[in-house]
Image (tube, rainbow, N blue to C red):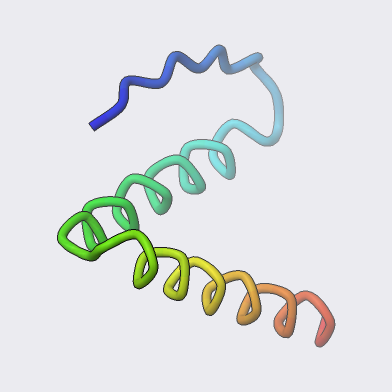
Length: 57
């Protein structure tokens, strides 16, 4: 796993940033066993889902 240093500036978005970091870490662990092509497919599918949800708001 790659170490990422993040500086969080106090403000209203702290919780959202931490949630996003936790979700990214969770997804990374879930796809760790997949080969690169399948990882890319998972990430592409997640991105498409997010774009659809964003379009509905």
